[in-house]
Image 1 (spheres, rainbow, N blue to C red):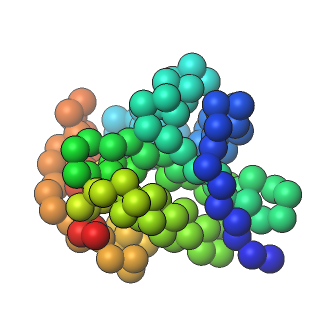
Image 2 (cartoon, one colour):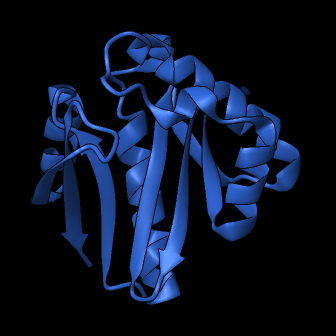
Length: 154
């Protein structure tokens, strides 16, 4: 079944929120400090949509992934890349990243940026496979784990 990507509207905010919560649930008790995704509310997602945007990935009529983005000068920051656990390993995250890349080109961005916990090696490797490089590594502002800033030039 093919993957179809759509732009999320404000009416889609509950769906974006639900996918994110389901996708990030596996990180509860794993990440130190915990992901901020666990504390987000539906209103936080609505605000994020208003400040930037989000996309939804579909397989048939089932929404299986979401990701958010925001514009900062000539950079597009990507966050909360989320794929429902039963649908992982099928190219959904890569398809969403590629879609945001096209949006960023159309917006005039020079590069893309995403923050990734170093402990999440599968995520680091995914982004490397699709052309991202580690530009910086730093300790999480709340202490604990290390975060990689990964970038891709357009």
